[in-house]
Image (cartoon, rainbow, N blue to C red):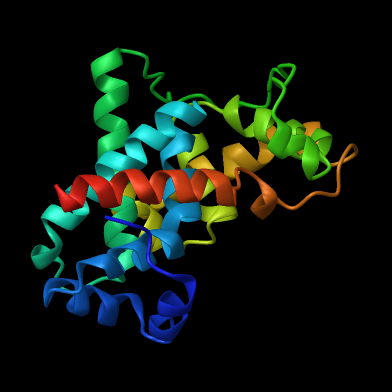
Length: 224
């Protein structure tokens, strides 16, 4: 299945995600591309916060989109489509982490998680092209947050989700979300406050070439 012409996508772009979902279910399967392009950044950041690897995050995204397409009729509209989709991606990412045995559970009894080890960021042309040093510093600091705190920080501060939405996605209580977010902010503050003015929302962008590549792969799988 080929990527839909940009003009065609623009014509449908006035519809909400939920309206596009209904069109896909009714047979306009090519419009699933529109749902992916709208949500790629959010899905990528949620997946990467858990697996902490760009290539693995893309694999998670691909499987999450395939799973979402296969189960699209189960989307009941009780939550936003983006919330439903990110939850699928989170479940896929967590399952991979468990299979690989590389999860580092967050100890809720730890009071101080302010020790953030700064790794030297690997070369990444996309980061370098967009004043990458500051962004890489932020991304490394987020990567070094403990498991649990890292996912909460990305969903709340990078994605801007509410405490309730974050708790639902991670299947924890709202109090846990608040505690982990507080610890994550504290851990990052001393590392970043005096050294950068970059906003958290600038971290972990999913740029156009990667977006096109992933969309093509998923649409080919859907076409069967």
